[in-house]
Length: 304
Image (cartoon, rainbow, N blue to C red; front, side, top):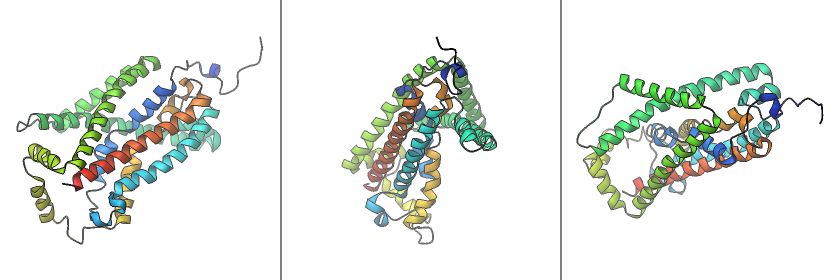
C-alpha cells in the first residue's frame, strides 16, 4: 500500500462523500436557475420597451434573442468553468477556481459577491412563491380575491428559506432525493404550459376566450387600454436594438445560478468527468426552456 499523501484536490483531502450523480447535478442547476427568469423578469424587461411586431426579427420578440445571446455566453463560460472546476473538484464554487487561477483576494471578493447574490435570490424566490400562490388562488377562486400584504409575503418567504435550509442540513443524499421529487412537479407543469401555448398558437380564438374568462374582458378591450395609455405612442416605441439591449439585463438575471453544482463539486461522483458535462448539459437545457417559453408565449399572444 502506497504511503504517498493524497494530492491537494483528492477526495481524501475534503472528507466529503461523493453522492451527487450526473442527473442530480443537472437537476440542482436547473432547479436553481429556472423560475422568475421567464415568469416575471420577461415582463419587467419587455414592457418598458414596446416594439412593433413588424420589426421583430423572424417575428420573435427581443427577449427571445436576449435569451439566445446570453445562453451562448453561458454555454461557453460553463464549458470553461466546468473543466477548470473538474481539475480541482472541491466544494466552494467560484472561490476555489478564481483564488487559484487569478488571485486569492479576487477569489475572496468573488466568493462574497456570489454569496450575496444567492442570498438575495433566495429571499426574492421565497417571496415570489407566495406571490404565485396568491395569483393562483385569485384566478381559481375568481371573482373572490386573496390578498397577501407585505408582512404576509415576508413571513411566507422567510418560512420557505428556513424550511429548505433545514432540509439542506440533513445532508446531500437526502437533499438530492428531495430535489429529484420536487423537480419533476414543476417540470410537468412547464410542459403543460408549453402545450397550452402551442394550442394558443394553433387556435387563437380559444386563447381569447380564456383571457376573457380570467381577466373579465376580451383582448380587444385590453389593447384599447394599452393604446389609450400611450403604449403605441411613437415616443415610447423602440427599435430592436434598444429593446434587445434592455432585455439583456433580464436574460442575465434569468440565467443566474448556472454554476450551482460547482458549489458542491467536492460531492459530485467522478467530478473530473461529470462536472463539465453537468454544467454544459444543464445550461443547454435551460436555454431551450427559455427559448421555447419566450417564443411560444409571444406567438400565442400575438395571434389573438
